[in-house]
Image 1 (cartoon, rainbow, N blue to C red):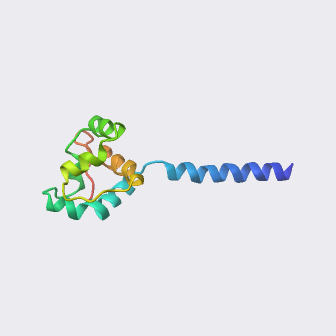
Image 2 (image 1 turned 120 degrees about the horizontal axis):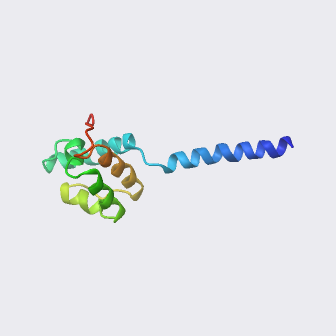
Length: 109
């Protein structure tokens, strides 16, 4: 009985780590923006991540991401930006969504 309970506990603990890393995080998206996009976007006239996020409403950012057009939209707003890894996109979308023009939030970058 103890072995079974131990195995269940380990399985639940393991799944909690997997599900946490699979979720998007706007703070991680902000860090990614600062690290991967800020310099190139500044050359394109976008001063910071808040300015870029305010280019669309929350619904628009969600639709852009859901349709798979986020990389194209980033390239459109920030032509000098480099191609981003696919795993970064959900975090960036979450960042843009949380600081969109209709969100009322202001990022610190």
